[in-house]
Amino acid sequence: MDVLDHSLMAARPGALGLVEAALSGDPTGWDGLFDRFYPTVHRYALARTGDRSIAEEIAQEVFVAAVSTLSRLRERSEAGIEGWFVAIARFKLADRARRRAREQRLQAAAAVEPDAADLAASRLATGELRAAMEELTEEQRDVLVRRFVLDQSLEKVAQAMGRRVGAVKAMQHRALASLGRRLGQAEAWR
Amino acid sequence: MSEMDPRLGELFDTLRRESATAPRPAAMAAARAAMHQAVAAQPERRGLAALLHRAGEALAAQRIALASAGAGAALAAVALLGWNAPAGSTLHAVRLAHEQLALAVPGADRVALELSYAESRLDDARRGRDRQASLDEAQQLLDDAHAHLPSGHTSPLWGRWQRDSAMLDSLRGGPGEATPSPGQGSDDGGSSSQSTSGSSTSSDRGGSGDTSQSGGTGSGDGGRDGGSTSSSTSTSGGDHGGSTPTSTSSSHEGSTSTSSRSSSTTSSGGDGSDGGGSSGSGSTSTSGGGGGSDGEATATEVTSSSSTSDGG
Image (cartoon, rainbow over all chains, first blue to last red):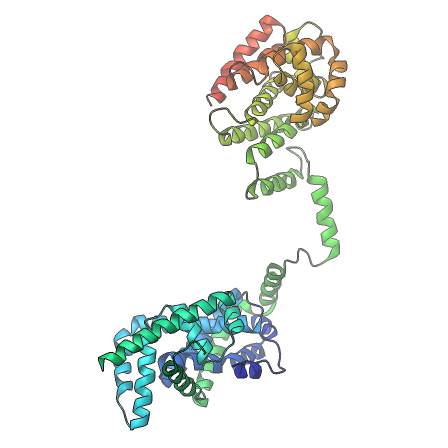
């Protein structure tokens, strides 16, 4: 579950050190943060949108926004700092959804179009999953993506979200139950 | 994922695989460039400004009070010297600052604190330390305390407020006169309080002592005793209070004090007849001391003012 975590935690400059370097105007600090967290941000955005181009746009917006808001970062742990970047991604996704709701629906519809049986089935399935996830609360969605797409442990998710482990487990439980009901209903309608 | 429906588990597995697609190098390069462009557009974070900003952030985040021990020692010295600096003095701001901090603490007994601060100003005035400024601040603090006292006059702090108000009135009544002479209730009251500036007054009214004393009991003697007791307890004139019982008796000793005290006691007692008003009047009378006429006159004046404030 924590393969990605372990890879991130390999011997490298600490995230806090990179933050401090970035805030002091050292460009290597920013590069370090970018290299460290861009893949996670990109993956999170891709999991949420299913669209590579949108995920890339979101990831870029995140790091541009981080420049002006990094001074307000209060997190000191690797998980907390990563959570901060992902939180910006979440906000950007919400903004995009609000501004381009119709476009999102069109994209979802397009994603349903099969080009090959298996792929179509896969895209249809994950498209439905994403659509069902959009019905969840922001935090529930965040927990599911972090846990089952980014493969983060409960502890890491809790730290990133500033919540207790028990609260994260409860959110996960409710989110899965809700997803199960929605997908079950979708199945029934077919 | 033990709690997850297998079908849902499969969907998440698929989602995981799809999202694991590596970012395109061109997109990464574009994002990095945009980030650096944004960094370059923030000159205020560069150089010395950036260092100062980071230093500020570090201090706030890590709660580091001072960078150098020397500066810390200097600040500590200033704090120590200014802790009880009288109104009007250069370091009085230090005193005001720590008092305001105490008042701002959640759950703090605001009225009790304001009364304590007022009593310390009254004590300063009695000692001749920036008298007028001290009295002005005492007035302000007593007004603030009055505004925060619960209505109904049931709080025990009402008596303390009345006594302090009486002391303030007596201190404002006139220049520090000579120690009241025996039998001159009013004179005593008034004079004592004023002249004493320190001891007499305090003892009489207690400054603290007296006040409390007066407030303490209704009757003269009783008042005195009670007064002494209360004063020591209630007022800042704690010192007075402390010494009050004995010293008071001794200092004003006797006569004057006695009469004063009785006067005060009677009047102020917070029991003061009319409560707030009483205190006012109480004090007045007290100051007036036994001196009927004087006392009365004073009492009248005080009563008026008291009533006013009381009516408060």
